[in-house]
Length: 387
Image (cartoon, rainbow, N blue to C red):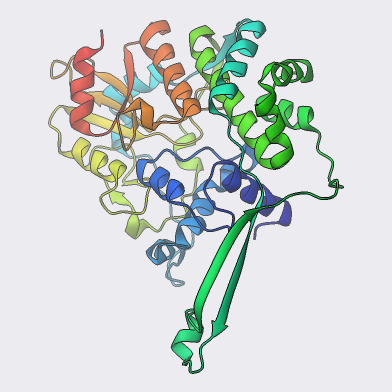
């Protein structure tokens, strides 16, 4: 059961990212991000429920999604998906030893530089719509049937007009403009105030049109610029502690085992891939890993395995050990995306991926390489370009 506070946070998330329209209907933008696997991350307190939340949202426009939410009541409620013999292969143990370190990051960048770039970004990109209302006029048909009533077609000659809402009275709702943006960007109030004072007057005036949308969009634009700068200035250090193998079995997936992929070379018998399609990007990737002669063993990495970044924790998708001599790099960590075009990824998602690339491909002394890919073939192609 979702509590009222969580429901409000989900609604705010959907509005903030343009995933619902003014009528709270799911937008094409949300559907596209689902298809490309580029959904904006949920707030940290909602992330443990992320799969269930997105499943419910997608069920609004795709009834087939609900099939995964019903199980056979006679089946065992909790099934185990233990580590199998593949986990203990020397190839995977060597890979696991390379990647199970924990890291801490450090970012040093000039606040003045962030302020300048954020002001420029807001001046170029910010647009806040005015609050609008739609007036609809229609006359009921003289003869109607049940079918027309059910689908809302009992009125004829329907006409509508949309107009901007002009405030004739001062709103009684008070907004902590600087405080809200400071919280959403994890910046000081002083820094946020300096940014707001620096943007063009016509952009600042948009706050009056729609305060909530102004706060959401300014927060997002500042975070985008912040994410871009972070990659240039982030550095990593290994800290005490390692990931235990228990993280692979700690998470209980909500999908039924009949929907899981029965793997051959994975460290667990079943792989629970993202997405609802039988041939999703992750499903095809797992199938290709199993059939590839050069692959020795692989793992679908759990959410508990993550790399800290200044814009949120990042969990790669796969860890793969190849047979020595068959490919250029025998250890690989991969992220499967619906597209290889960076322009189709959100700046914050790009920043997380770039941080992982910087860690594994530039700073780390391990034999592991990292890249985002959209297929097994693209992984092989990318591998050839990495030093």
